[in-house]
Image (cartoon, rainbow, N blue to C red; front, top):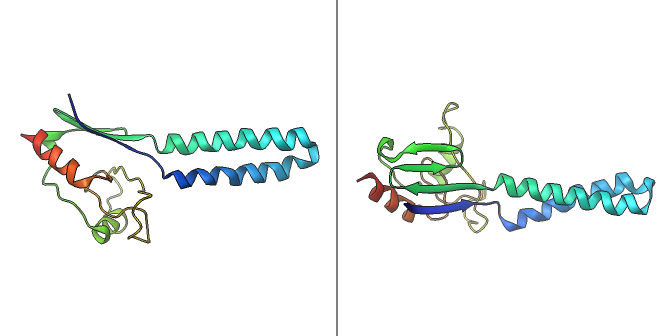
Length: 144
Protein backbone atom coordinates (compact mmCIF):
# COMPACT_ATOMS: atom_id res chain seq x y z
CA UNK A 1 0.00 0.00 0.00
CA UNK A 2 1.37 3.42 -0.94
CA UNK A 3 1.41 5.83 1.94
CA UNK A 4 3.00 8.75 0.10
CA UNK A 5 3.86 9.54 -3.52
CA UNK A 6 5.40 12.65 -5.05
CA UNK A 7 6.86 13.32 -8.46
CA UNK A 8 9.91 15.56 -8.42
CA UNK A 9 9.69 17.27 -11.79
CA UNK A 10 11.63 20.18 -13.12
CA UNK A 11 9.86 23.54 -12.87
CA UNK A 12 7.67 24.37 -15.85
CA UNK A 13 9.76 27.45 -16.58
CA UNK A 14 12.70 25.20 -17.44
CA UNK A 15 10.88 24.04 -20.56
CA UNK A 16 11.57 27.45 -22.08
CA UNK A 17 15.19 26.29 -22.13
CA UNK A 18 14.20 23.82 -24.84
CA UNK A 19 13.78 26.76 -27.22
CA UNK A 20 17.46 27.74 -26.99
CA UNK A 21 18.85 24.62 -28.72
CA UNK A 22 16.04 25.00 -31.26
CA UNK A 23 17.17 28.53 -32.13
CA UNK A 24 20.77 27.35 -32.41
CA UNK A 25 19.72 24.47 -34.66
CA UNK A 26 17.75 26.88 -36.87
CA UNK A 27 20.80 29.09 -37.30
CA UNK A 28 23.02 26.12 -38.16
CA UNK A 29 20.49 24.61 -40.60
CA UNK A 30 19.50 27.90 -42.27
CA UNK A 31 22.00 27.51 -45.15
CA UNK A 32 20.39 24.13 -46.02
CA UNK A 33 17.05 25.72 -46.84
CA UNK A 34 13.79 26.75 -45.19
CA UNK A 35 12.50 23.20 -44.74
CA UNK A 36 15.61 22.13 -42.82
CA UNK A 37 15.63 25.40 -40.86
CA UNK A 38 12.04 24.74 -39.73
CA UNK A 39 11.98 20.95 -39.31
CA UNK A 40 15.36 20.46 -37.64
CA UNK A 41 14.73 22.87 -34.76
CA UNK A 42 11.31 21.33 -34.15
CA UNK A 43 12.96 17.95 -33.65
CA UNK A 44 15.65 19.48 -31.41
CA UNK A 45 13.04 21.27 -29.25
CA UNK A 46 11.02 18.07 -28.81
CA UNK A 47 14.11 16.03 -27.89
CA UNK A 48 15.29 18.69 -25.43
CA UNK A 49 11.85 18.84 -23.80
CA UNK A 50 11.79 15.05 -23.51
CA UNK A 51 15.24 15.14 -21.92
CA UNK A 52 14.08 17.69 -19.35
CA UNK A 53 11.00 15.60 -18.64
CA UNK A 54 13.03 12.44 -18.11
CA UNK A 55 15.44 14.35 -15.83
CA UNK A 56 12.50 15.35 -13.68
CA UNK A 57 10.84 11.94 -13.69
CA UNK A 58 12.08 10.98 -10.22
CA UNK A 59 9.48 9.92 -7.70
CA UNK A 60 9.42 9.60 -3.94
CA UNK A 61 7.23 6.71 -2.84
CA UNK A 62 6.72 5.43 0.70
CA UNK A 63 5.10 2.03 1.04
CA UNK A 64 4.52 -0.05 4.16
CA UNK A 65 8.16 -1.10 4.37
CA UNK A 66 10.23 0.89 1.87
CA UNK A 67 11.19 4.40 0.85
CA UNK A 68 11.86 4.70 -2.87
CA UNK A 69 13.50 7.92 -4.06
CA UNK A 70 14.38 7.80 -7.74
CA UNK A 71 16.41 4.62 -8.25
CA UNK A 72 17.21 4.22 -4.53
CA UNK A 73 15.11 1.80 -2.49
CA UNK A 74 15.65 1.71 1.27
CA UNK A 75 13.87 -0.20 4.00
CA UNK A 76 12.09 2.26 6.26
CA UNK A 77 13.48 0.46 9.31
CA UNK A 78 17.05 1.32 8.24
CA UNK A 79 16.38 5.06 8.34
CA UNK A 80 17.75 6.83 11.39
CA UNK A 81 16.42 9.95 13.00
CA UNK A 82 14.93 12.22 10.39
CA UNK A 83 14.38 15.93 10.62
CA UNK A 84 13.59 18.80 8.29
CA UNK A 85 16.51 20.92 7.14
CA UNK A 86 16.10 24.66 6.68
CA UNK A 87 17.44 26.36 3.54
CA UNK A 88 20.95 26.99 4.90
CA UNK A 89 21.36 23.51 6.34
CA UNK A 90 20.05 21.89 3.13
CA UNK A 91 22.59 23.94 1.15
CA UNK A 92 25.43 22.78 3.41
CA UNK A 93 24.44 19.12 3.06
CA UNK A 94 24.33 19.50 -0.74
CA UNK A 95 27.81 21.06 -0.84
CA UNK A 96 30.48 20.94 1.91
CA UNK A 97 28.95 18.30 4.17
CA UNK A 98 28.02 15.95 1.35
CA UNK A 99 29.72 12.57 1.25
CA UNK A 100 30.93 11.59 -2.20
CA UNK A 101 29.81 7.99 -1.70
CA UNK A 102 26.32 8.88 -0.54
CA UNK A 103 23.35 9.09 -2.85
CA UNK A 104 20.80 11.85 -2.62
CA UNK A 105 17.67 12.65 -4.59
CA UNK A 106 17.62 16.41 -5.05
CA UNK A 107 15.39 18.32 -7.37
CA UNK A 108 14.71 22.06 -7.49
CA UNK A 109 11.39 23.48 -6.45
CA UNK A 110 10.27 26.18 -8.83
CA UNK A 111 7.93 27.64 -6.23
CA UNK A 112 10.58 28.27 -3.56
CA UNK A 113 12.33 31.59 -4.11
CA UNK A 114 13.83 32.16 -0.67
CA UNK A 115 17.13 30.36 -1.33
CA UNK A 116 18.96 32.18 -4.14
CA UNK A 117 21.70 29.55 -4.45
CA UNK A 118 19.23 26.85 -5.49
CA UNK A 119 15.52 26.33 -5.84
CA UNK A 120 15.27 24.23 -2.67
CA UNK A 121 14.01 25.94 0.43
CA UNK A 122 13.66 22.94 2.74
CA UNK A 123 14.58 19.28 2.46
CA UNK A 124 14.87 16.04 4.36
CA UNK A 125 18.40 14.64 4.67
CA UNK A 126 17.86 12.05 1.92
CA UNK A 127 15.33 13.31 -0.65
CA UNK A 128 14.39 16.88 -1.33
CA UNK A 129 10.66 17.32 -1.37
CA UNK A 130 8.03 20.01 -1.73
CA UNK A 131 6.18 18.61 1.29
CA UNK A 132 8.82 17.81 3.93
CA UNK A 133 6.43 17.87 6.89
CA UNK A 134 4.05 15.40 5.26
CA UNK A 135 6.87 13.08 4.19
CA UNK A 136 8.39 13.17 7.69
CA UNK A 137 5.03 12.26 9.24
CA UNK A 138 4.52 9.40 6.77
CA UNK A 139 8.04 8.05 7.40
CA UNK A 140 7.45 8.19 11.15
CA UNK A 141 4.18 6.31 10.69
CA UNK A 142 5.71 3.70 8.35
CA UNK A 143 8.62 3.07 10.71
CA UNK A 144 6.30 1.75 13.43
